[in-house]
Image (cartoon, rainbow, N blue to C red; front, side, top):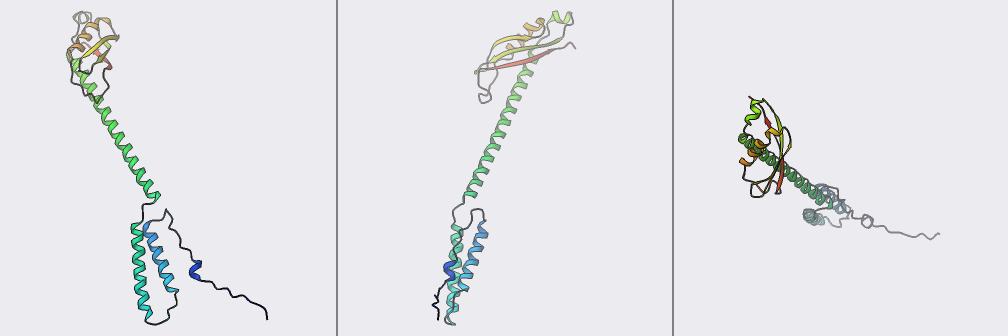
Length: 196
């Protein structure tokens, strides 16, 4: 007779509790936990017929406990990073919208300023008699208090110089929104002199 060793293996010891993966949704983790609890309780040997009702109660309690654990689960790294990404995306969108609004307000300010200067320009009589037309480019600096400074002619016929400088001077002071630009702010504008 040969010596045989008897090895006892418990199925419960071999089954390791699997940790839910970070990428699995909560509902899937909950279903796996419930399935595992059910399978563990079904493999138990029931010694007495009355024990079945006791095990069913225990099984229901275990399922409730597992469901509560799944519900209380801390947010995973994946969900946390997803919220962070969404938050940063909305922040970027807000910044883009704010930048577009600022640019629109700056453009509106510049258009109103150009319109005001054009209203204040006068066609020089000497240019009218000689039928001289053309564009003139002027540079000037708007101060924080809305006044103008350093007006100079950059390009164009010199016959329009005095008229252009007067038009700019008559257009100031203006109301300035300090949030639009950092003052003093330099502007360049083209003034068109056209005979009608």
